[in-house]
Image (tube, rainbow, N blue to C red; front, side, top):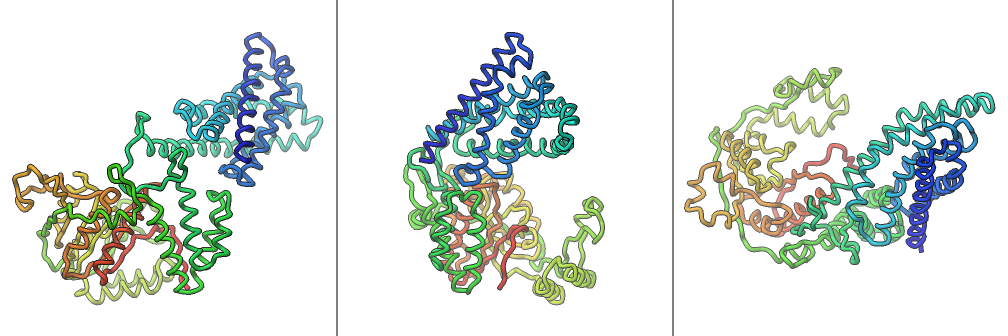
Length: 549
């Protein structure tokens, strides 16, 4: 019923604005003055513009996924103009900005409502309509805003005499346009970037569908084949907390507007997890289990769950290559930490000092300062101090580390290699990435092990030990999203007699980061089955807040 209502609302609104635009153009071509034009299109304009107030209610009650604040700002600004200037003030009706405002509004609203209508009725949006919806605003928003401001200004002499309070109110509104207008334009620009990114992810640049492969989001609409993140996200949160508290799980399940209403359910999830260690483990276990079951893995014409794929594609497709660094295996003998800035100095003063390091007594003193200023916790400072006082700990030549996303800018690869560690590296199979990694390994004190796809060696009449670094970079690496099961198989068999620490240091933007995180979790889970003495490491997001009971 709600869908039928929304289809009708968007159809009627598009038709209403089209009618207003038709009348406005007809009046302009006939040479009518703004006053004469207002007499023609004023009433239908008031109707279609006033009914836009329903959109605030649509957002408020979760009928659509639009943010309430932005929707209220957009709609209310129009209503302030139309009722606070144009409708009551003759001088506004006489001003040429009336044409500018009405035509800009109409050209903005017609494709917007047709966009929503097409999505609701057809489940898809033609590219021309999509492009107009997310591109025309770059001209129409500034033009429309200019018309609105001029309508306000032209009405001010009247209100100054008739209603001085409203005259002052208009001044405040005009002041609000200064930050408000860029905000609205920037909001639409960000929406444009997000929409194009999502559409391009689903289809090629030419508009043709790209064949999906590897770990992908699940289909959430069987009719359209859409792979939505919102419904999947909700299902995982609902299932995870359901393992401990069915009441909270049912509340989350009933949430209609998950995109903007999820926060309270995430908070409930955290509260339940904090009740006990057992509860926290159950919530996490069930959430990951559900994710592994819902997300899909595509290989050729076969689609399975990620969980099934990890058990299905276990063949070995990678060979192992190890590079030994040219530096001393003992590595560094004292701990130093990069520290460019000083408290109280602006960032730009320390920008050129990124290579500065502190060590020894200076580092110990800095640890005290950091703890006092709340930069780090006391236990972190204690751990660093122990490393300073026990330099033999810095020899990692007997330790083995698997780095998923070895080339990550925030990852520990340079440090581990400098300490003589044995690094098993996994990263995307792109030559520039591996040229950099191999060069770093050659100049280091560590051992550097990485996968090479066997198929890429076909036709190369050389052993990997005889290949140049440039040749190795051309065949090295693996795709975490497409080779997920095979990477797990390879990691499980590397250095079988050694205890390894597996770290996830990967990152991608948006929905792809969820896929990548799940791929790494699937790999780590499978390796943990084969190597029960496994140690884990993660690169946490700096903005994350973790509750510690």
